[in-house]
Length: 231
Image 1 (cartoon, rainbow, N blue to C red):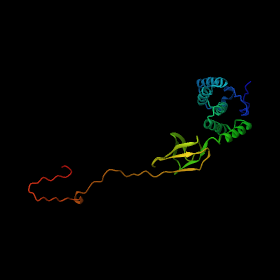
Image 2: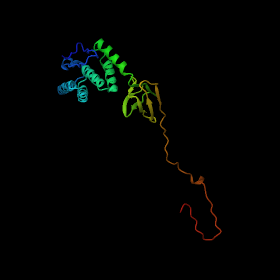
Image 3: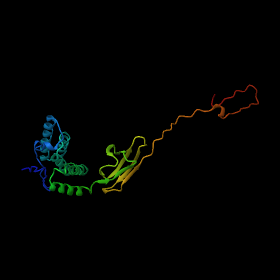
């Protein structure tokens, strides 16, 4: 028997069961959607749960990801976090559990919050966390072509350990780009310095012919042809 949500709580993470909740029962938690979107989200949720029971984790994750995009709900997000964790997609699992706490902290149970934080502590040893800022503030921060937000970011960036390409973009300034290796766990803060974009052009200035350099050529042979740069 699959445990159902009570007051938007979640079962203990040690349980091997996933939540088979009714999305309609908690429709007030989701953003306004059309009836068609809600129906499709429920269908995708059911498909994902069925795939999870068959241990087809990739199909389950795909279905629940689409369902959550159509109809955001804490139960769907919780299941996504659990499935990513099962599939050892630790970065995706970390992000899902963190969103569960940040977005639904007031509607999930205290036990669910404590369990999610416990899971985040466990997963934090497998992901790289980094505070990224810029001078001046207000720059768009991009990591490996994924827009992370505008500095100052609301939370540290969470990445797979390894080399990443970090960019800062701000109108009126030259883009700043670096590549750096990040290790699992907390990393030192990264500060990106942007320089003001130059307003000068590379077009040559007009030359004052009166002040232009002159070359005087003399020849001892009358009628000799003078050539400069093949002209």
